[in-house]
Length: 187
Image (cartoon, rainbow, N blue to C red; front, side, top):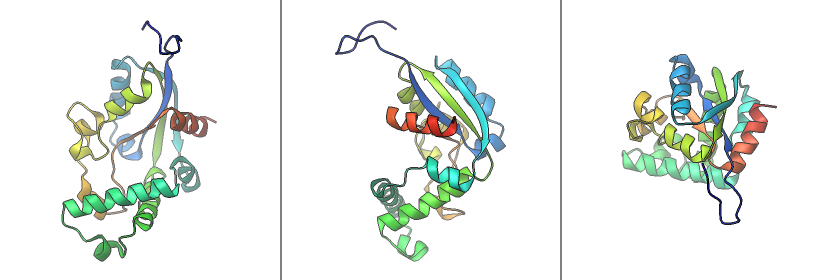
């Protein structure tokens, strides 16, 4: 890739984190997912299989009030879209409390089995990796994406089990998150 950004500096490859979650590992999708990364002209710069403890998983997921409220708000909107009363089901409609419930579900899920942590490197690695993953809910993810092709979980799944959606993969949201997550998973 050639050219320069607004400051005149040449573009640099980025690094981001991709987690292949326990559901994808259990289904033996690791090789298929890694192949999709490489076919997108991204490099695998680090690879490790880890068993995350609950404490480690808590470090991975951001638990700021803003993040928790955002998760709670998304759950409220999703419940409304399918006609479920969150208050009747979970005993509250407070976005922060709901975010904490989701947070704990995510922690349980990430620590439920082996996780393959991957450092992905390349130009626009953060954006490209997130696009390859597809939308958070597999049933809404576009065909051709990892979640769209290999997942089927939807909003309804949140109420059947442990308050998390088994969505196969995680990808860092931005460069700052990628840096923090890579340092955590590849100490």
